[in-house]
Amino acid sequence: MIGVGAVVFNERDEVLLIKRGKPPHYGRWMIPGGALEWGETLQAATVREVREETGIDVEIEVFVELIEAITPGPGGYHFVIIDYAAHAIGGTLKADSDALDAAWVEKDSLSERDLSDELLAVIEKARRVTRRLT
Image (tube, helix red, strand yellow):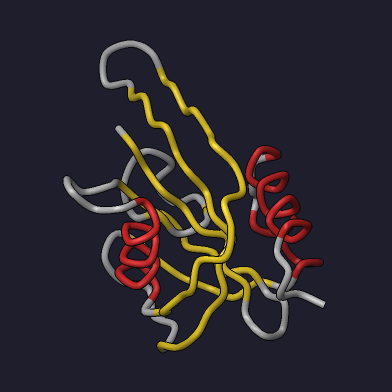
């Protein structure tokens, strides 16, 4: 399966996170994202998924990382996930779709959300490659 994700920044340099409401990683804090739909571009899917899960409208800035997530065996999965850096341009924050919760998180508070080392690295890379943060 092909998935997309977005490291979304707001004007205060906070990062948008969601608490997943379905497997894999149920109940875990992640960046918003989801599955690519047939005929949809990667960036359009990213904008749609962020809006569906958080109510936030975004503008995609730049590709950040390609992640391959594999869990072998029965019930396993194989996702190829394309992550982008994006910026909030509107909307009202509200967890929706398959998100249990959504929050803007300050850079110094990310460690309180039990994020994987891989996700922390993607967030940091997004921060480095974006041109809109000061």
